[in-house]
Length: 175
Image: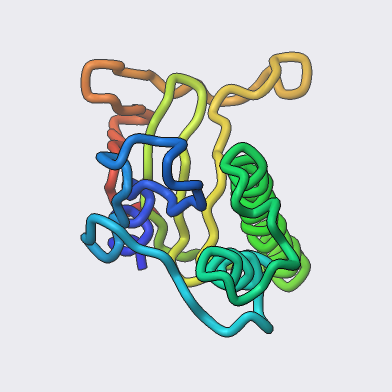
């Protein structure tokens, strides 16, 4: 799971765009490794699918109901909106999964293997593959809240955090 998450995060997110608005050199689908691509699925699933069907019908003269789709500026604005709403739907889906997982695990104490995704001076991002969870572990809480906290020592050259002779680094397993 960690390998999938790490490899897909570095890929460019697929987006809708109107040809003629961006240079053809940017017409690329990274996941499929193809120079030009449009998805064409059943129009009962998503609004973007309906738009692709309507655009094709208008372009070949089979339907005159949506002539505004031939206007590149309007189609580009529609694509920007579709991309924004798609991203917001992804965020909402992730938040829903996180909330459900929190509700299931909130009264459960367990030791699980996790991986440090990255280290910063005041925090580490941890992935727990068993539950598909990732979160930020803040290392230096507000001193007014907890004056007795143990200090981590940050090394920005590696980057790493050290506590009690234990060095934590990126992509390392922790329990």
